[in-house]
Length: 317
Image (cartoon, rainbow, N blue to C red; front, top):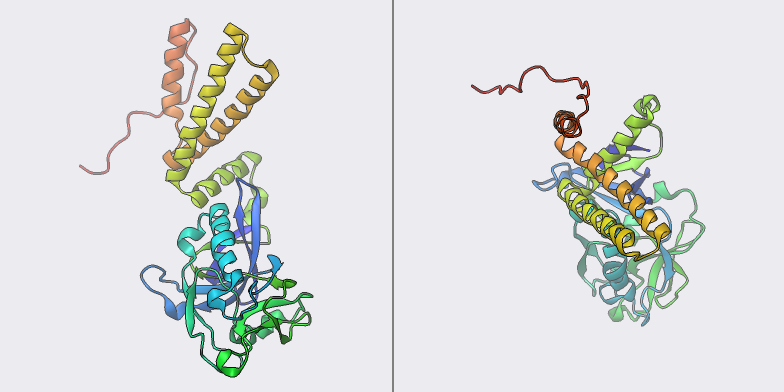
């Protein structure tokens, strides 16, 4: 995988959002870029994307109504799917924006007007305008948010679907066997992952690859979040050591479980300390001074560390 900006990808290109910490990833496809919509919050514009595979199978609306504004599927996407997506991929909290949805029926009636979504499905017009990127038949039926008609046209039960061969059809809104492919409107400057190997990555040592992982975690979750996790992990290690002391002095607890807990918390703390090095820079000078002090305390010769000559100088005078 390599990192690229979303607006560097062409229409129909698949990309991934990745969570290195929880080992999760989700695949989307670029539907259309909107560079002309650039503004202060997203100068590079926005990009409409759709999940590359069905999230699940569900009814458009459990009550059988084809009005997307009140559909049970819309409620599920906003109240269940979206919070979990944002929790797994925090970068979307800033990158996924609310966008306008046109609910004009397939027969042209506009009873349902428009609505705004943070997560949605494609409309029939969006699908037709980008039909060329869906030439590989999906093999499943999936919902679009466009109604077949409206109450003023004599029908409120059918919504448009993409058929297994990629053509358009319609189905009863209460049919629970149709696929769901969430669509998002993302800031085009978002960094995403695409398949392929970075040429430079082949030359990296294991240590460099480890550092790259820490850098990716800080970039993905943010410095403040990782500092808070570092504090949390230090607290967890403190508790594990206190439990070991209770076992050692008062025979409380089970030895194997306590040693396992200490090993896990030491690993967590070590990982977070490495991320603090990404945030604050290397710490070798301070470590050397502390080791000198420790050597003096225990009566051993000081270790021969490479030192910077003189102090740091300020460029401003």
